[in-house]
Image 1 (cartoon, rainbow, N blue to C red):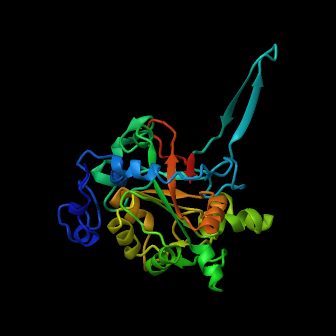
Image 2: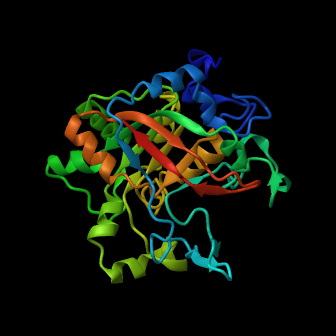
Image 3: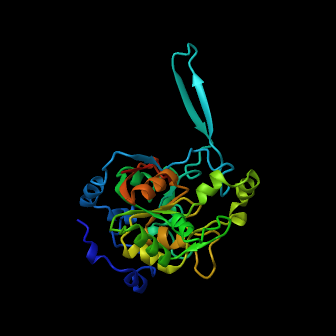
Length: 323
């Protein structure tokens, strides 16, 4: 069983000389390919399952054809329906399916650190189509079942009279995360999947004009998008690691505030290749958040079944929250 107290602190990781500073390379073994998901222990899963108390199930997934137009140059899936000549049965298939277009996971081969490379010393030559290392099938074969915790930053700041402007790159720092957890009377525990609600998807689905959607869609997304999210600062990586978070997801396009600030750097580099922490983006949290606000319970049993696609970079989240 994983011994949580014996794991190094983020300060320890930052001071190491046997691997890139701030990395968890080797912490879960030299051959590890799932990173922080190792923090989800069997006892933690049993405890998480006990959070199912009223049988309420919340899908955390957008339709696979949203956002439309898709962000970051990805394409929309084209659904095709087929019928037999006798019309006795039907079948269907999808053209142009990008697994990370909608509510999705960034797997551990999604991004490499520009100097240090991929997580746990995996070489570029091991990131190949249909196999190799760090593919999403390594996660799919074990599945994800854990305690989930929602931090509803949008609701907190709106109640305080400081609503987030969804058209800006508002950065959420550690102080805000801690204040939100305290206001919700919830504690982040080892092995948790942490969900952060910024309100961006609510804005996109309910308030954004078609002109605004067009302006941030397509290949120009990286240059035109502004969206709130986690700060890219080192303190965010330290907060997530020191709390032993297994993975983190949000309802915005990139988890972190976009565009990344030069002074803080790119949070993706700190989490995916350095810590081996998967990132979820564009998760649909609206019904779950409303229920949490109503009953005051911000913890739940969370499941996610990524596609068992050999060599996959990422996957639809296929996530459920159960209370």
